[in-house]
Length: 272
Image 1 (cartoon, rainbow, N blue to C red):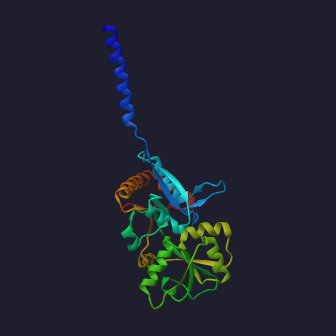
Image 2 (image 1 turned 180 degrees about the vertical axis):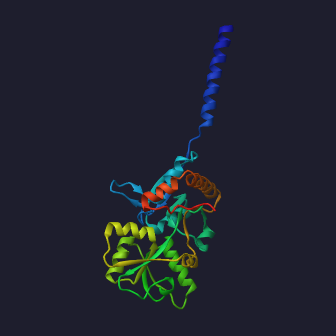
Image 3 (image 1 turned 120 degrees about the horizontal axis):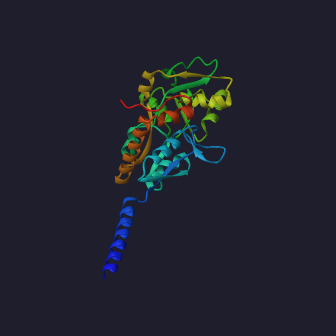
């Protein structure tokens, strides 16, 4: 009897220890990230057919420091990213998204992911556009939803009698810049680091960049890019995890390293 009692105690102890271990290790919840795979270098598919870019690698870094979640990535059309968040197909939208009041009613915004630095790009010899104040009446093409398109929309709301002639396009930014160089559009508005990155590859010979002053950036009201989640209990919980991860990555310098990798400079947001 004594032997059986000892054996039972050992077995029970091992079982309890196993349950303790299994109880402390919960399976991570899979979260799906929707992205369009453009504009590069925020989100794109590389030569190895792997989805990458600043937004994507920031999320992968957050994933590493957020054991409660595992991020899965799905490429879709830019117009379907937020629709996927609406339907629950995606839990995070990652596409160089800027802030506007209409979106803020529908989605929960993360802490800033990227500090935007805007620039106007025109053909060399075009002296009619020298600042943000000059874009009224001039033609521009830009992708739906991204931060620099929101900036143009905000400008047009503030100048209803002298709007920029905005054409929405699904073309990637390099094609839009080629169209500006060819004279199809008068200007492009985009992030300065994005233009520099593209120009290194395409080496435009007939374009010039005009970096906007901070006062102009304030006027157009889109100083940062963000991740978006649904405005519900699950979305709020995921957003909290994103913000926790972003804070950690800022403090340990990871955000700065990722920015330098994709832009050659530090555009990571800084806590005030």
